[in-house]
Image 1 (cartoon, helix red, strand yellow):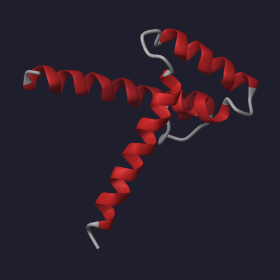
Image 2 (cartoon, helix red, strand yellow; image 1 turned 60 degrees about the vertical axis):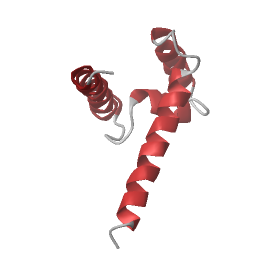
Image 3 (cartoon, one colour; image 1 turned 90 degrees about the vertical axis):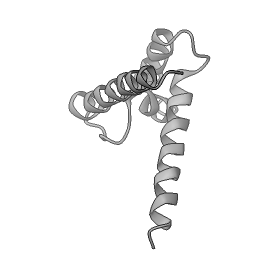
Length: 90
């Protein structure tokens, strides 16, 4: 992939993630460290509201098998990567 296309693609993805985190914090009193998708995956186990949100989000991302699960896994992997980097600073 051309570097310019990669940068634009990454910027777009990061921007959407930022907006999702802001919506989670401002509209749903959640954490800025969690997207709406990953919150729907986690909280959907115990909440009808978040289970419904998860279904809506998965419908919006119809080309992915299970977007909310993939979003949660991506956040977990990103956190693990950050923790590994911090361990290297000691």
